[in-house]
Length: 459
Ligand code: UTP
Image (tube, rainbow, N blue to C red):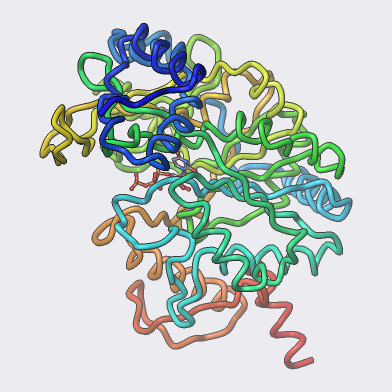
């Protein structure tokens, strides 16, 4: 069968052929009109210059290690009391003036968790079964209540998660945040390339694409007009967090206050790495610029090296919580220069005959941008160390480490600590979790809130 193409369609096919990517149209004659239309629509969006750049990235040698030095890390328990108080007050003032937005990135495919739905809809409350989204929304409602101004929630989704996430919020009445209090927007997608730099077809009528990484957030904020909206609403600071951290203290005033006080463009929370072999990115200075380096980029000696205080010198483990000034986000978006990182993956596709192939080993390179690659662009930044057991319990895997089970245990343990610090014995013993315990995030924001609630209950 010969398909007659419009002038525009012919031009599109020609462009792909000239770029060595004409094979994406090889099944045109097998597609019905709607299928062809969908393929043309998808391929029109693919930037072939960018594809060529990605192919070059995939073949590029790893970057030189450069001169690494540890980052300067602030530790709340080492800060003078008045500095800490001042930071808290400054952060609270930002919240009371309604200048802070929460930015949740939730566009990832959550392949390791293997959950049938957006990760944020995963039930995680140890007692209530409340979902990750409900944890976050509860905290946001509590912040609005405490400071008198809402912290609007911006959620980045992707083609992989958008519809289901919108449906989740809509069908639950926007989790009590009001429709105007939640805005969902999609990030961009990036193709995968085989070893010859060719695009892969996921099916005869669709090119394989995947979300372009959490670093796609800057571009997406700009493309969807959200940076303009933030400016118009006077939201000068963004609290960035990821969907998988059940313990995140959204809009933590101390962090916001330190970041703002330092006139920082972008700041980061870290946890102290104790095990040199822990596979976590580390905040360092490379050739004078702040940066997150991957675990694999440290030499064995650097990984093990300890300072006079006994701490790992390269131990500032990145937990993907940032404060970002809105105008800094705009600068990053307009620069458009965050690098793409390559990852070899097994990418399912169709072969030259259109038969599905599920490779057992990596057959292609996927490309992602990382949000922390914006760090070297900021002139000023705060790196704040926080306690892991208080603020970081990621849900990555279905079982074992960083799983729903470990996150629920972390929530129970934190609830127990907060209760005990307030003098409330909850009948749990030692470190083990004797039973599940949960504090409603809307009822208590932190350990001090438990004391306050207790006083209210028995004046
Ligand atoms: P991860 O790197 O853990 O990826 O994302 P993931 O997609 O959730 O999980 P796996 O690797 O497929 O198992 C960390 C955070 O960044 C977001 C995720 O939604 C999560 O909040 N993310 C990741 C995006 O928003 N977009 C992306 O393209 C990738």
